Image (tube, rainbow, N blue to C red; front, side, top):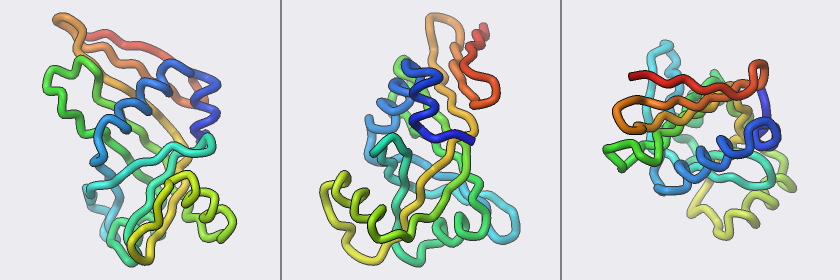
Length: 156
């Protein structure tokens, strides 16, 4: 697992492209695992702050309970570009709930607003990042893992 800063150091262009895809829309998708092991897909806002990738969610939400029980997750940029010219970004990793008041205050300062009610905050560790785009008549997949570095696959 790696921090977002480690991704930026290892593959800066890919990190920037993936970050732009997640910031292109307020609404992204989070996949978590339910108690019985089946997948759950939920809407989520993703923030990049202080060299970290963050997700916050309403207090007591099902997706928060999922992550508290099993921290494995996948994020999807939910592209609105049907031609995938700008790409379809994905991140897989693990969530770590942040409960330290000082760390939460820093995150809130970077967020620039106060959530409307009780919330859960998770800092994400990255296991794999990828962005898939259509280039002409083929797919171009750029990916990165901390144990492998960056690579590209082209499929026609």
